[in-house]
Length: 141
Image 1 (cartoon, rainbow, N blue to C red):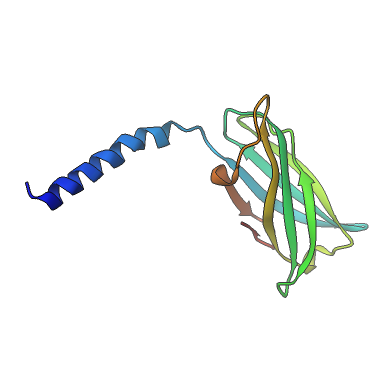
Image 2: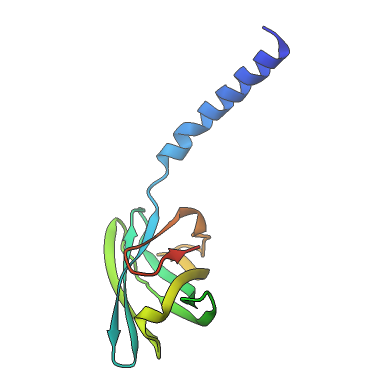
């Protein structure tokens, strides 16, 4: 066996040894912008939070940049979605004040201000987060 083949074999075995660890992780957290609805005073947003982890999140706060249809940042909005129970989907409604739904071109996840499992330390949730949108505007990282 030449040196190149030995190196490739070692690399393949190393990759396989980490594969079970990746599969053993519990699921992630999906945030879906499900729909918009114009209401008096603004745009009502309907978010679904699908927590497929084994953790109850007692803190989950997102900073969102609301972008106009021409790509200009209209405003920053912070939403607090906690609590998010483990292995459950939760519906949360948030109003974007003084905004017509049709004027929203995109919602950008600017930051996660808090992601804290119950009785746990703050953690970086970007790695377990998936964003989806069924609304007219995409929800993006």
